[in-house]
Image 1 (cartoon, rainbow, N blue to C red):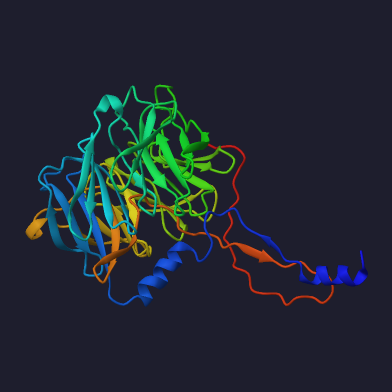
Image 2: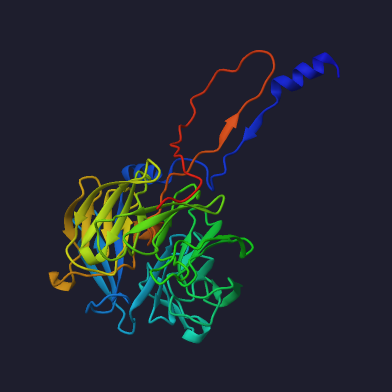
Length: 417
């Protein structure tokens, strides 16, 4: 090659090295904070569906809407008389819709702006039913687990978010699909099976299972473990899974390995609910039977126990967080300041009577009367690494630019008990 050509090519060659993260740009929690701070006229509301299908609460059926920025005061109650015990709640800001699974067999699509049902469908339990559902961010695909109660159906339904019509069923080979989580990018869906202790990863473009691993532990009788509530980090490299006892597993989503078992040995019962703060610095673990919430340092592996927080009552067990990480919302009706770890409010019922207990709720932001941003019913990590650009060259050095620093954690090769 001509030396002049070689020098020219070398001086302009740019190699882009992109990380394996699902999204690029600011960490999602920082983006939410900056958006909330810069957007004027944004209303942050918490939509709580009740009664909860897993809890004994006599709340009037419907949606309880609370003002996050006004002491979590009840703004309104949207009455839905025929709504049964709710099993899950998901929303799409793009579609302007809220999706509520209830009665174990029904799925409701609710227009957030017009505050009315768009459609409602039902599946009998032998065909699966409906459990904790998730939706792609664009509102086009709804992924419906069959339910922890199912014994015969080994599939997961994919519905058209616009019409509720069945697009297809995904054969997962085992029953009791219970919880589903949509990745922030909408590119992958995560499904947990209660009866077989596995996590399945589905490509939402093809609706094909691309990964599966487990089981996560074993129950006291020696049977296969279970995947009860779980959560993922923003980069989709780690998962944190409830199974049995008071504790959680740490799983490697990239290599499909169970890495650690983190147990609270001085606690009774078993955990139901695990959540990661949006900044991914902490793991919160409800222990319903002890009326406590355990907090762990997630910047080290395995996560290290920090403290416990007393909550107001025994419950089903659940935890999620506001998009900016300011508040923690368990299913006890408590509102906890995530930084001070103090209970700062409770979710009151109509006319200030009683406390609304539910684990099926979601944060929705409005601007000019339209939904612009939604949270998640699960407490998921929202630190999403940037793509990194590296310039290669020959000749004159290129000025070094500031790189975005990413927190890294080390993990063991094998789970420890």
